[in-house]
Amino acid sequence: MENEIRKLTYCDLGFVDYEAAWELQKKVFNKRLARETEDTFFLLEHPHTYTLGKVAHRSNLLLTDEQLKERGIKVYDIDRGGDITYHGPGQIVGYPIIDLKNWKEDTHAYLRNLEQLIINVCKKYGLDAGRKEGLTGVWIDDRKIAAIGIKVSRWITMHGFAFNINTDLSLFGGIIPCGIKDKEVTSLEKETGIKHNINDIKRDLLEEFARIFDYMLYTEIDRSRFINSLKEFERAEHEQG
Image (cartoon, rainbow, N blue to C red; front, side):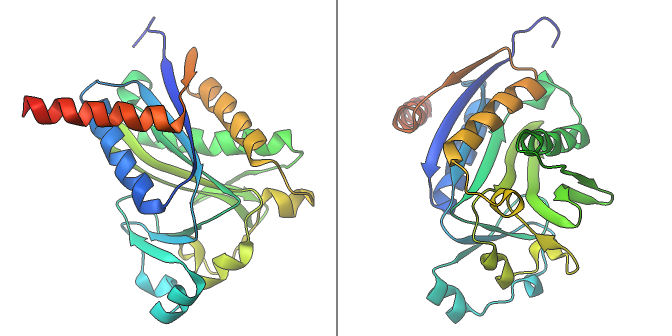
């Protein structure tokens, strides 16, 4: 929409169980669909979790149920694109819930711009990251530093990216990441040789996301206030029903 000032609501959710964050995404999706909220961008971390996308092969999960339980890893079959990936502490996960009708009705362009977001932030830390033909995500040579898996319904986005910062990469050993057997997984810490402040990287991601997706204004809202606003929306829906 030309001449419209694009606005974004940003919320740092901190450390959140995967299932709780997924439910939150669904609620915000419904609120965005009803035009009861602006585009929303979440950044957060998850506890140890493996997620399998719509085209995932269960054989790419290499651990038994007993091993998963011993290591405290939860597993979810979810509705994003892509195969299997890992989420955990030290990895920043980004969930944009935005209406592409107000940007570009182009899922491919959206995906490529999420990749560009990570590429640009990596560059800030001296890393030459890029794309790999035929594969999604962000790569440094043959090492994957960020996975991307999205869902777009009625031009509103869900899910997003997982960017390895100070991630324990050994957890990727329990899966065949994204179903790709001949490539490594890496992190910002591994590539630069130092641990990074997660909050600093979140700030870099927020600022770059706003720039890439043409947001003129963004409002930061704390987690508790955001959850309360959702509860009010749901209560109003219930009363109308």
